[in-house]
Structures are given as C-alpha cells and as structure tokens.
Amino acid sequence: MRKVHKKTYNIRRVFGEVVRVSPLQFFLQYVLAVVSSVFLGLFIVQLQNVFDHAAIVVESASADGVWSLLCSLLILFLYKAGSESLEIANGYLGNDFYNRCAAYFLDLYNQNIAKMRAITFEENDNLKLYRNALTGATSARGMLHVIMDIFTLYIPYFLTIIFYLAKQDASLLAIVPLVAIPIFITNQIKKKNYQRLHKHTIHPKRKKEEYTKYLSEFPFLKEVRVKEAFRFFYGKYLCARSEYNKLCLSTNDQEFMLNLGTKMITLLGFITILGLLIERLATGAISIGAFGAIFYSLDDMYSLMEEMLISRIETYHKGLPALKSFIQFVNGAYTEQGEATGTAGRIPFKKMSLESISFIYPNTTRMVLKNISFTIHRNDKIAIVGYNGSGKSTLAKILLGLYSPTEGTILINDDPGIRSGPQNASVMFQQFNRYKETVFNNIWISEATGDESAGEQAKKIASERLRQINLNHSVHVEDTLDILCAREFGGIDLSGGQWQKLATARMLYRDRDFIVLDEPTAEIDPVSESQMFRLFESEMRNRTAIIITHRMTSIRFCNKIIVLRDGAVDAIGDHETLMKTSDLYYALYHSIEERYH
Image (cartoon, rainbow, N blue to C red; front, side, top):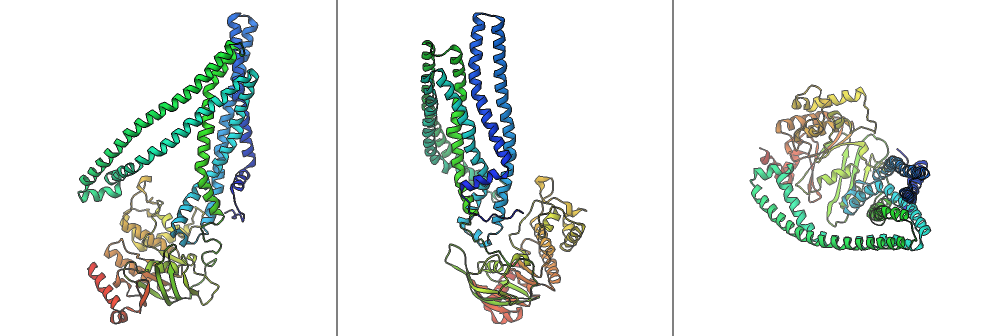
C-alpha cells in the first residue's frame, strides 16, 4: 500500500492532491471544457450568420447567396459537432479521472482507519466523523470539478455571450442579469419553502415507512405473522399513511402555488427580454438574424445559468461538510492515532500479567472493569463467567489489545516493551461476521494479506478445518470449499449454527498461541456444542485459551475460572474449588444448567 502522507491537509491541499493524481488528465479535461464552452458560444454567433444568409436567400435566391448559406450551415454544424464531441471526450476523461481520485483518497482513508484504536469506534462522535470522512474521500474530486466547471465551462460560455451581445448592442447586456436574477430569486424562495414543508412531513413519513418495514421486510415479517400482529401494525400503518397523505395534499397545494409564483417571476424576466429584443429589432439596432440567434439561445442561457447558480453551487455546499470531515480525519481529529495496536510481528506467548486493570468507555462515567488483577501462563485454559453486563466481553477485548485499560498495566512475557495485539491471537466473538463469499474465503480470510489468490496448502488446511467442524455433512455437497454463502449471488443460505461452525473454522485456521472464544457455541445445537467443545479441548492442548461461555459444564477442562461481578473479580479457582467457596459461581452454575436441561 502507498505510504501515508505525513502532512497537514486543508481544502487547498486536498484539491492539489486531486491534480497530482494525474496532472495531464486534469488539465486536458479542462482545456477541452474551455474549447467546448467557446464553441457553444460561437454557435450562437454563427446561428446569426445562418439566419442573415437565409434572409438574403429569401429576398434574392442567387447562387452566391445559397452557397454562403450552405457554408454558414456547415460552420454551424462544425461548431455544434465540435462542442458535442469535446463534451463526450471530456465526460470520458472525467469518469476515468474520478475513479482514479476516488481510489487515491479511499486508499488514504483506509490507511488512516487502519491506525485507529478499536476503542475509538465506541464513540458516536468518532463514528459520525468516520462515516462523513468516507463520503468526503470520494467527494473531493467532485467538488473541485464544480469549481473548475464554473471557470472553464460556464464563465467562458457567458463571456462569449456577453462579448457577442455587447458587439450587437450594449443595451442587450441586460439580458444576462434578466436571466440570472429570476433564477436566483426563485431558487431562494423554493429552498426556504421546501425546508419548511419538509419539516412538517418528515415525521409522519418516517412512521409510515417504519410500519411498512414491519409488514413487508423479512427480518420483521416472520415474527409479525407468527405473533398475529399483522392487523395491529396494519392499523398503525393506515393511521400514519392517512396523516402523511393529508399533509402531502396540503403540501402539494402550497407547492403548486409556490411553483406558479416562481414560474411567473421567470416568465416576467423572459417577457422583458423578448420585449427588449423586439424593441431593438424595430429600431434597427439588431438584424433579424441576431434576433433569431439570441431568441434561440435563451433556452441554453436559462439552463446553463440554472446549472451554475443552483445545481453546481448546491453540489459544492452539500459536499463541503463531508470534505471537512475527511480533512479532520486525515489530520488526526477525534482519533487515537500514532501508537500502533500491539507489537509489530508475532511473538510467542509465555505469560500475561494484569495489574489493577480498570476500564471506562469513552463519554461515560460508569466503570465497566474495576481493579482486576490476575496472571495468564502459557497453556492456561481460563474461563471467564458472570451474569450479562459483568464486563466479560470488555475484558476479552483488553486481553486482545483492542482496548487499552483506563487504569492499570498489562505486562506481556515480563517485558514492558511488548504490547498485546490482535496479530498475536486468534479470536471468535459472539457477534462474528458472515461474509457473502465462498466457504473457503470465509475461512482463509483470517490469514489473508490482500492477495486474492491462495495456494493448495491453504485449501488443504481449510479442508481439514471443515472436516473438524463437520460442516460438510451439514451442507450435503461434495465440493464444500467452493460453495458461495449468499443465495442472492447464486449460492446458498447457511443456518445460524452453520455460520457459527464456519466462524469456528476461521478461528482454528488462524494458528496462534493465544486464543479467545466469546460464546463460541451460542447458535448451535447441544450435540454439535458437545462435539465443538471436545474439538476446542483437543486443539487448545498446547495453546493458551480464554473462554467466555454460559455453558458451565463445557468449561470443566479449564484449569482456572474467573468469576466477574459488576466488573470486578469475585473469585478465581477451578470448578471444584469455586463450587465450595463462591456463592456467585454456585448460583451461576445451577441457574444456567437448569435452563439448558
């Protein structure tokens, strides 16, 4: 990957980076835009010549007059064809250049997001910044394009028109403001009223859309039908739709009157221009050809002026917040950059010591973990148990180095220079990802390095992991590795238990000394669960393992059990000892086992 730039960004520097992506393409594109714009303006000049020569031919159909008319038509065609051809070439270059710029800035975004500590994703302000920054990464090229279009497309066109009008008659220069002012006024009126009308309808519209989801979308539909709640939500939907429709009818009436008023403003400007042209024609200030050319070009003037004053400027202002978020992001705002997560490269695990660890999530005051101390030795099998909300998963993330403790220290292999990091561990979280890829890619991705190809050895190992988790038997197909796990892409859907088995294979494929399992059998049946824990016990014989689970009988092979209560260590010991000495562990064991049996 390209090395991250060590520089401070602002809007000007971002635009400079856009140009540097491909200077030749950038300048060629806008040279074409200028020439195309001038051709479009000269088309009007030549159109006057065509009309004037046509008038001469009508009065006196001489051979010279016809020839002059034909030559004028040919030049007119060349201007038009040249403008259209250059516009097509410009569009082709622009699309290719846009894709190059998007790739460049997304690369920069991804390099920075890879440096973010996992804890930063717990803050809503950061998440909002990251989402906006991602949008801004792809909008930088578009925003510079807006500015460049104004200076290379619209302004050259209107300068050509202004020069032409001034040459015909100075009073005709009034046409330009007569085109621009009504467009600007009507846009301001529409924008203000649209915001007001949108505010009134947004709430009932959202309610209607939410009830529509309950009645039609798959994640809700099954439960709604089983619970016989369809009539209830359908009634809610009808009420919301009725409220929304009433507001829409009222809004439509107001929009009709608004559109009528703004059209009248535009029409008034058009009539004024037409009156000016007729008056100049009647006094002989302009020819019939000039009258026809200017009248014909009014439509282009209105559309291009509207594009420049409304569409293009609005596009720039809408994209500006996202671009500013991207600039804040790459400059390090609201992030915890600089210190890499973990120690670079893999290290053999020997020992991990937690000394008075406490943890508080960002923007909260509740201490999730409180003064936790214990030691993990090589080949330890440690279970972490406790009621929901006791801090088990948070502790696992700290052990993995995803989160840093708010207080206390973690010592790896008795070396203060080593930091815990996910590159030294294999993990299976309760909320694992379900990638819409082949079975093989879902397994191999745990060790993928960006290269989309994998050797025969990788497939051999993946096949062995599949055999261990018994996914082949569940799917009933011969070539399991090539199965696509997405029915919408021509593959098949896996059950929740099959996905959990696949996530297990992914964890086992990643060969590490330190393993963390967070509720690893939550979605599989009891028989498969028993098989899976036997597999864990076998595979982890020579590894260090941390297991978080509610199935207490499944962790008897662990040599140490840590019982958490409200974020603090309540007790540490093996099963037999804790059954005698820990009231909380005794209650957990019996209450949870009664639920399963």
